[in-house]
Length: 378
Image (cartoon, rainbow, N blue to C red; front, side, top):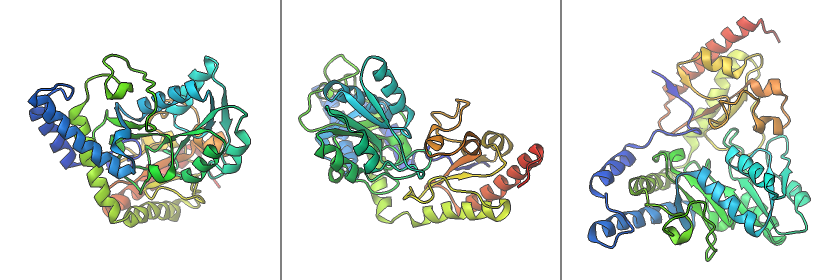
């Protein structure tokens, strides 16, 4: 059986989520935009889900716009702020949904300033302050990095940005459901989240928009959701999103101590057999489930091929098909060789201690084989 340690890429939907989605597909098939009883019933289920999602992330329900996921949400937000605030500040470690969209906007004349991170991958207030232009601007910044799990101080960064008249687009995708989040307290203007990152269904996410803001849609036709995103709502997905949010609220109350303990045990087991293995971003605050670790002398892609019993990644699932070193790790100062020796292990709610022991054992054996094949020595 494969041990799944790629929960930052996606998670297995919780059983209660699957049950809710299936039930909604069978009995809640009405179009929520319809005024008849079947449509109103579907809308009622969506409103309940809206309240659950909003409660989890700490915003008013009216600020949520349903999307197909964080990629669409971030695209929408970046195009919206590019119209009003023009100049974008973008840290080099952002998700490709932000980087590639910013590149496209730059190609049509939107000024983009790339913000450096420190050696731990943290976006510092000093770096942001140094990049702020003398014109309206927006900062796009992630709460938690998808590759390293490194956390940014969003509330402090938002304070700096707002003091200078800017707006904040926060990619909260990786943090939601893993540790607590309060977008209202952070005072961000826009935020993106996605259900499949915390045991919800794929293909459903949300964009948090400013109260009273003018819509800037990417998708037109019908003026649904206050004009922000047209199209018939994915009612089953939204209901599953709501159930996942309710489950996350319950699990966060019990803390994440065991998840962090499993993560740390993985590192100890790897180092105990393979020698020192530096943790990328290890000196910064991190998500409790994420271990981005470099195994000297072991190419990450070769390790994946040689260890089929463990599902893990050499970086983001959205970039792992691209044969280049991780842009996140190279932005942190790692050489291409060191970046290519780094793997991401992300523990999940379904991970057991037996999984941890089995995965570490198999990873060590595979790493030794790769080292032998390359005749590596310290």
